[in-house]
Each structure stands twice: as C-alpha cells, then as structure tokens.
Length: 287
Image (cartoon, rainbow, N blue to C red):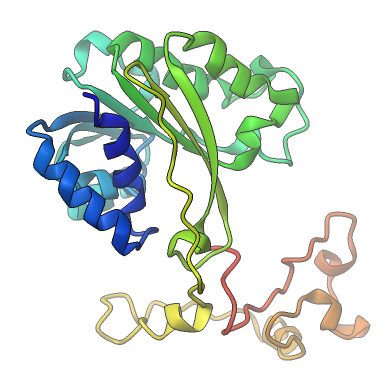
C-alpha cells in the first residue's frame, strides 16, 4: 500500500494523454515491486475515457462500471470490457457493489460550468449526482478515489461543490490538480480538474509538460478510409457553406461579411466559437 499513491500517478501519466519515457521506467519498477492488483469501481463511466488507462495498467482491475447512456455503454463494452452496466447511479447501494480499493468517476459537468448561475447546490437538477458520487465513496469505503470534471468544479457556486467533497469525505486526504490535455500528449487545449482522495497517503499528480504539442493536422492525418465510419459526413446547408467560405483557419464569425451573418453571429449569446475554423498547426479547442 505504500506505493499506491505512486501507482495512481503513473496510471494517469501513462494514459493516452501522457507520454514520458522517465515516467514509464518508474512504472516498470513499481510494477515489479507490487504483487497486488487493485479492484476498481467506475461511476458515470461514459464510453470509458477515464477508465481506459486503468484498464491498460496491470496493477488495476476494473470490476464494475455504470452509465445511463446506452450507446456509451455499448462503446465501453467494445473497447474495455463486459463489466459495465446501463443504469442510474441513483439506484446503486455501496453494499451491493463488488469489494474494491479504488473508485473513479466523472459526474456530469453541467452544474459546474460558467453557464450555470445557480448559487445553491440543491437548486440544480444535476447537483445531486456529485453528491451521489460522494455517497458511494463513503458506502464502499474504498482506500482511494479519483474524480474528474471541468475546472469549475473547484470554484463554482463560490467553491461549494469542492467544499462539499472536503467536508463529506473528511476521512480522506484530498488533493486537486488541473491538467491541460495538450501539455500531457493530447490534441486539445481542454483543461480538467483531477480530484484525488486517499486514506493511505497524499496523492500528487506528476508535473509533466511536453516540449511540443500535437496539432489538429496531426490528428486529422490519422483519419483514413480504414475507419469504419469514414464516410459518415454530414454536410451543412448551402448558405452555411457560403458563410464558412469567408472564414480562414483560426477565424470565426467576425470574418463573415455583415450581409451574410445570422442571428447567431449578432445576437446577445454570440461567442468566439461561432463559425470557428480550426488551425491545422495548432491544438484543437475540443476533441
């Protein structure tokens, strides 16, 4: 157990978002030292993006996963395993789940985004889901939990969400880190908050920043006709194509002549991503 916090660091750093030779060599040493495999539970599993690095690490065994989206569950089964079920976290009881040492999860982010102006936790329909995540950490009694979400989970509603985690899970030593996808090997500049709680020692994520970032062009070159859905392309309306023809790489609605702009370009809710075109030599703003 003295190595578990290190293993958690390595499991994250060796996911598809991390590539670092020195970290890999440390991982090999730890794997030799640790004879244990840690059973792991997953909540709000989606298609398994958080679960995938745990599934690839021999030190962890995913024994249960759940998501309410049927299509996501089918993707999970195909890519990771049959241990996932389609259902609601609200119906779960800790005593009915397999015994495990680790619990991971990423509750829906809607309550935490900047769009949410609600100041009281109980007033948002999805706020109960982070509370359910906390409840199941307590009911299962796992040694370590990992929660992933948008960065605003730490500050939304004057920090009440994060404070709830600290208060309700006071038996754990909790740390929070912000991870930027492109800095650790991904193709986007999206940021994520990683909250770790441990009963067996403080967990600190490794501070890894790559020297060069992957670009949109490097991602798109991998899309070939070998992909089963390569021809699944939806074309916009002709007038939309005309508007987009004015937008250079890196541009947005501001590059469209006024006579072609729509309400989306001129209304009060307009934003910089409206009619945004990605630049091939930069990171992407989304997957």
